Length: 265
Length: 265
Image 1 (spheres, rainbow over the protein chains, first blue to last red):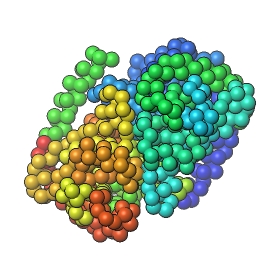
Image 2 (cartoon, rainbow over the protein chains, first blue to last red; image 1 turned 120 degrees about the horizontal axis):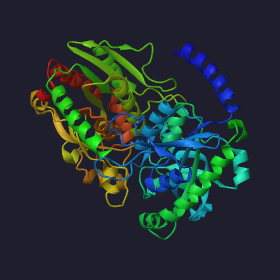
Image 3 (tube, each protein chain N blue to C red; image 1 turned 90 degrees about the horizontal axis):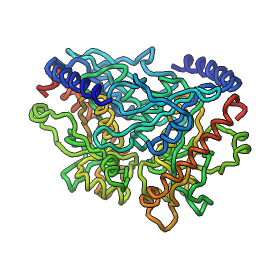
């Protein structure tokens, strides 16, 4: 495997450099919840697939369309077939982003969604964050090196110009499969130096890294984790309003990307 | 979607029934760690792929060969490219089982591996369990119905004859991405009524259920979770010996399956 691997790495790097200097044309937006996804589907006038690009049996939904010079694919993991709720969390996100990359070959992934924020790190409800780094906070494997694998720290694709232009907040994102936060989660989130907390980001980053697709993370704060209100209650109360702010921010990001190369972001 | 869905469900059921009455020919064995996988690779004289059935960039490894009347595919998620440790846990397992089902169309999945056991539920080091049910213990989403989605309880494929013949222990399996156990994990494991605890099973069950492939779970106890010894230490101490017991048990399971239909298991 080694010589082959070396050769394809070099070829891959050349391809990556070439891709960075061509205008971005194909964007994959992954959003975990229908409530978060539909405002963007309407905004960009995307249409649902009649014939799915995904295998029979999976609930994953693709909306797509042309917006300015961009081909937009918005993927939502769909409702759980048995329970009827959004297929949130890392397992579902990793599967759908893997299958979407295989089927759609995007130039860039935008994982957008709601998140919990930490007021001790400056977050307020309604804030929009662009994640600088993503990591897991609920994969504790106390064996040397396995511990680092569990944390799975990855940098998101660097977009200094986008940040300057849109004046978004920047912070580290920490991912776990629970909506609440145990003391162990809290310690890991603190070790991750995270400002925002979600349920998909680090899994998306893992798959994007495996398949060498640049990924950015746009997260809107629905609830303050280190505040007084119970997370589930605050999350449900603010979901609709914050989703509108998210739609606005993602639209600004897409408008900024339009006509640019990866290296210009 | 509804009328189409209904039709294909009926067709699917007919196909499932047909499949249940044909001799099993193609088995997919998923094992998370190389140490657990290699004894079986040697035992069944499987060979590694030269050209991978998986996309470029992923570390997933397939060994395959013919054993008696069976085509065996043993899949190991491989070493993390950056860190060099086995790609354990639910994200990696769900990706590799998804891609393997797509590429290899197995009749039956066997997820084999080591696990922690609870002595309060009768487990001892070296015991081999066949899981009756699998569920997650680290996906707490305290919103009605989302809570059930998080737990993700699924029954494994029922194999009453295999159980009787091989005299394996039966217990419920609970899955989480941490090797240790927080008090919140413990409460969820207790609610799951689990005897064994692993880091992949419920994710494999989720994907197998999505893609309608029967799955069974063979788990060998390397450490006692509710005992005195620290899990990581006990796990590493017993890994080699218990892996030998796992190899023996999986061989017995494969020998029992050979020549039988799904409905005869």
